[in-house]
Length: 134
Image: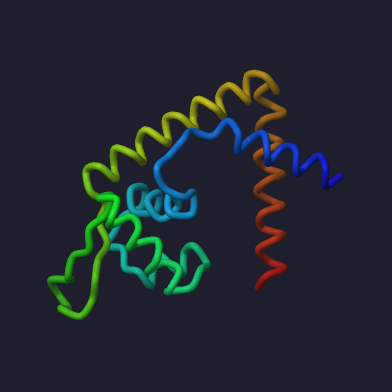
């Protein structure tokens, strides 16, 4: 059974669009571009379920790549907000379009009903794995 999951994961990753950052960093960019802000490093760490040092590392890499900027909070000079740059938003939008195309092709090949079942089961499996780590 694990061979089936490994093969699926390998094949799904193989068809993913090429991006100039790690997928874990893309997850940060995804949150910044698709959810209302303001976003703080602490909030990002909590949403992604990772440590603050991990988020700091991701944000540094994203900043060096010109995909995010840090802005001091106008309300509290000690707090830092993270904002996507135009370049970051463009990368997010392109990657999303590419992923939608991949998933659309997968849905066509599998059939819409089977594809929806796959999404539901993957979601349940993700939740079950998250519960075991809590």
